[in-house]
Image 1 (cartoon, rainbow, N blue to C red):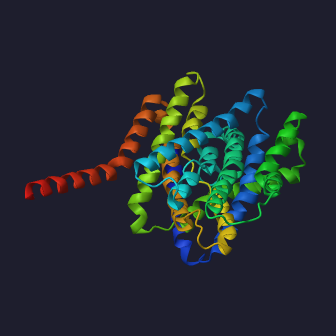
Image 2: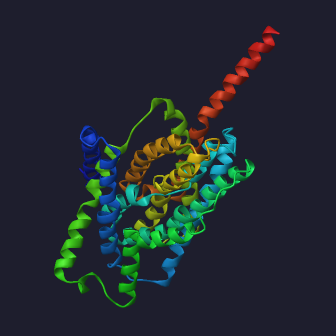
Image 3: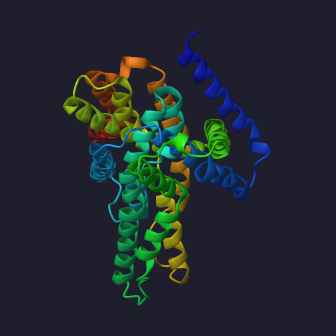
Length: 371
C-alpha cells in the first residue's frame, strides 16, 4: 500500500472519529472551542515552523497578489453564474452567495493536507498567499457588505449612524489575529537572519508540540461540524461544483503561464489553494449586519441560514477534492487534466438547469398538442 493511500485512509478515519463525536460535542460553544484551538494555537504554530524553514525572497510578494486576483476572478464569475441560475442580483440569497463563493478558508481545508503531502515549504508559500485572501475576506468583503446594507437603508429612507471607526477596528483585529501575528514575527526574524534553531530548545519543543495538534483536530472538526439537509443538497452541490470547476479553470490558466520546470509541490499548490472551502469571515460580516438590522425588521441584507448550510457543505466538499489532488501525485500537475476537470465540474453544475429547460420544453410541446 502506497504512502499517499495510507495517509488518505488515516485522514478519512479521523473524519469518521469526528462524526462519531457529534453526540459528545452538541453545542455551538463546544464546536467554537475546537475551532478556536485550531485557528489560534495549532495552525499558527505550524505556519511559524514552516516559515522559519524557508529563505525569504522578494518574489514571494507575487503570492498574495495572485491569491487576491483569484478571489476577484471568482467574485465576478459568481455574479454571472448566479444570474444564469435566475437568482435576483439584489436579493438576500444572491448577496449571501456573492460573499461566500469567492472567499477561501485554507486554514481549515487546505493547509493540513499541504503540510502532510507537499511539505513545510509548500505550507509557508500557502501562508504567504493567504495574506492576499485575508485582505479580500476581511476588508474588501466587509466594505461590500456594509455598502449593501446602507444601500438598503437609503432605499427605505431610514436614518442610521455609520460606524466610522469600524475599518480602523478591523485593521487592529487583523493585526491581533494569531496567524497574522505569527506571519509578521516570522518574517521579521527571517529579515534579521534568524531561523527556528535560533530559538531556545524549550520554545522549539513547545511550538512543535502545538503544531502536531493541527491535522487530527482539523479532520475531526470536519466530521463534527458537517450537517446535511436533503432539501438543500441539490442546490448547494450545484453551487459548489460550479465554484470548484471555475477555480480549476483559474488554476489551469495559471499553470499555462508558469514555467514548466517548477517543482511539483509548487504546481500542485496552485491547484489546491483555490479549492479551499468557503471562509467563515463573510458569515461573521453577515452576523454583524444582522445585529444592525434588529431595529429595522423590514431590512434583510443576507440569508444567514443559507450561509450556514453553504459553510457546512463546503468544508467536506473541498476536503475531498484537496485530499484527492494531494494524494494523486503528478496527475493534477497537467494543465489539460485540470482544465478538463474544471469544464466537467461546470457541466455538472448546469445539469439541474438543463433538466428544468427540458421539462419546460416538454410541457410546452404537450400544451401545443392539446391546443
